[in-house]
Image (cartoon, rainbow, N blue to C red; front, side, top):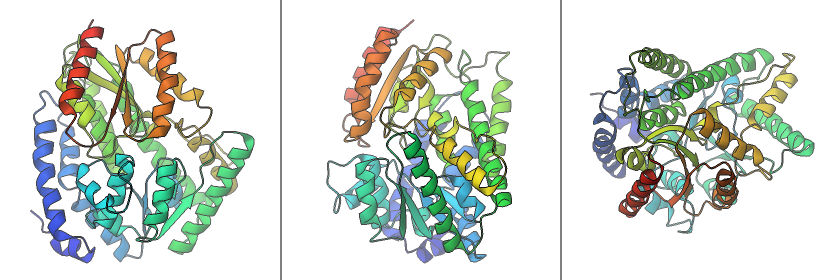
Length: 424
């Protein structure tokens, strides 16, 4: 075992709180993930990544900083990782999915704020996340009012840059977003002292597209029946993608895919062929938020896809071809990012079309629309999703919850009733 306490101390972590956090995670992880039967061998790497979540990867970030590099924290898939990498910096995702940090956040934020916002903010004010502490500055975005106002308070504790995301995909909105990317480019060059060139951006985009392609490959493998990988494991892989080294991560995901593709002919599944196939849609599920998947798969279903920012909204879109110039590449990145069908847009019919397509192509028996409590954007859009799926005769269960365990029994009862209704 490597002792990282001196590194955590240098990062000004609250070591007492941090020790409590690290005591909780291993037991939870073992009971949820390591107890699964017939897991792919290649999942060993992702188990290791979680076991070393505050260790090896943080050490890599600190070594990068010691060599003069920068680390940039971000909270949304609308922030282009490749633009950050083109400046020689390392991007790391910071959204949090645990109840642990929420009490610290609620000393500042209103209690009726969504759990993802509170958990993310709480890790900073409570000084319990080494990724936040290691970040030279943070990038926020205006995808929802709660996050937008949280970033104002976050800026009092950590250098924060907020980029505007348009609410409409009109020509005006697209021009606005391109201008925001250009402003972000200037910010990155100022902070890193490195010029972003057509060459460095092309190289970085190739790395990110390769990562997204690997995740798409894994997603497509989940079409198989019987299902070759649990929804819990597939979700975990995407969650790890937000902080792991992208080149190493891509290699490990492709190795996992190769193993799973070898299971197709012998039909070596992780669940019975008649297990109800579920698509989860809605709010993102940041690490370590495994609550809904655990309930669904613990009740006999198998999750075969996530229409989510920790799912298809993150990896579905690759970068369109450009003329190769820096300006042309920025335009291509802007176009790629705006194909993310987030509920922040109005109108947002494309997301509903995505859900219907995923439900059909992945042969799902039902859709569970997951909504974080007080996430009004997705809650309101769920009304349109429900109406559209009713027309298509696709069963839907709407779930609204937070990161706490108090409602687990109630949710399990509702899930079991839904599964009984759709059982083939």
